[in-house]
Image (tube, rainbow, N blue to C red; front, side):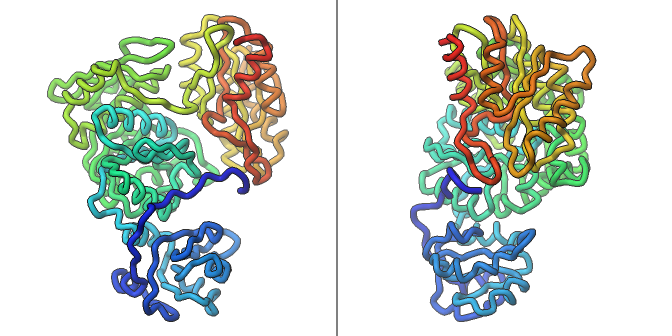
Length: 514
């Protein structure tokens, strides 16, 4: 994809490591002259090669990375990590080849070794699940900072390095990027790292080489069935997080039926939490106050532990995420009393969650929220939260990703139509798919609802939000789901500049709402 791609974050200083030592350490053969060759980094992309890098030549769906070894060498690569097939393709390589059975499987451990990320390692917290990963990560990092801990964060939205904020490239970066990021964090004295871990990251070894102190599980619902054959295969990708080679302890929410299965099939010690009153859960989250600016809740657990606090986003599901974050900290060894005192001192959890039910409107006119949710389950929870504080009508604007799981589109349309009074279906990231065909599938789901809402089909989304605002009155709420924090749309492989926040504010201003 071209245009506006955020940079790779690397440490400022790396002590060179010998290729011969690498081969000896991992018992790997070398092709070519490696005498005196030292590396200072790794990358899987030729365009991101820096002088002194080892280029990791992976086999792709259509081509093998070994075809680009000459280009990598011109860009400054001094060695290549590849497989037997790659070694044949790059037989004329001007730089030495280190051969491994699976470069992708080995990338995490090799990156850990090159960047020395296990030396004086920080604490690692990882969160997986279909929905709520990003929110839980931000809430957990926020509490850590309130406890006085210097933090790092890797999420769908941003990377944080001791207060520095950088826009993210992927939910979970490649293993080489992840370890480079951690090395940079260590240079800034980060002592706790919070990582959002996608199913794809686990399947493709993107967090390999990181030993998590605590793994968290939010929920599982219909998503990513373009990457996985069925829900069982999708679940198995998530369950891998609860292996002793990946994490030491786990905290599992029982709010979706899959949580109990994670517990049953986990190979590490786990504790459980519920915001739905599941009696099997060791920790319980109870809502004590719904407010347009926050959600207050009580967390109760073993040995009489009670923590009463609030999180800064509307929605009972957000309180569930906050409870999960707190229990993960307790499992990591933070004292409940210390957490409670820090939260009491600050009036609750201090965290900004970009694009998560984020209000972008003012005090007058309709409330307008942008949200990153893009699954039926996310729509259901977020619409319920918005409706709870809407005295008038609820208007929803959304589109769906192209070239992604099309099997969820019917339910996205259906759930949206069940939860709002006016529905505006538009475009999101069409990628290489015809946006008209995407909207058609969403409309079929929306129109399946008996006595459903007033439905509009509008393209492009700039016009869709203007229509929604024109239809809104004082007391109404508009939920624009999908874009959230993102500042681009993917149109035929090009990142086209685009901000739902700015477009919504502009539409409000044009309509006379300051």
